[in-house]
Image (tube, rainbow, N blue to C red; front, top):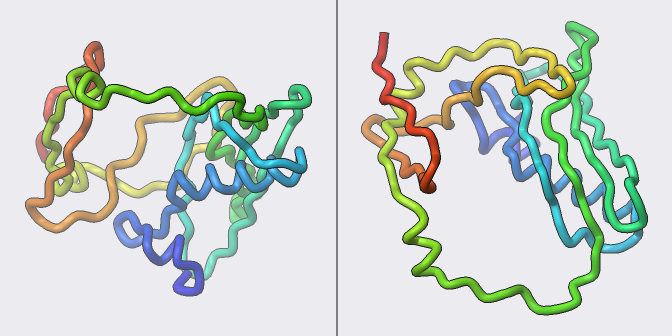
Length: 176
């Protein structure tokens, strides 16, 4: 794992976890090769199950591109667990290669900030409740369980969570 910075730099309770941006880069690179031109959009991305990698256990990951038309395709990233001989889908979404016809619209940052609020989350408290287990097999059309707790944090470290109007507030959890 130390040979792969993506794994050595992203650990959750001592196990390497593949970060979400890695899946997005895998999809972008595969779709660019498939279409022969740069990917200009990623849409409807769903992160289903994190990919945990244990020291000394090789994992095979496949990125699949299924063309929808000349400008877009669906993608999945799945891995094979040699111990159970199961494939698990980790992320899925849509990629597009539409050419940009106009510059991106300018956004009013002050107006966007007004739409959001911040909530402090105690990472250490969240981690005390997290147990690392083998990821469940993904079932098409069903998102398995809640997402894992955030990565390792120093005691007292706090994360700011951005909330938008209408987001459901979860009550704070307490250690058991």
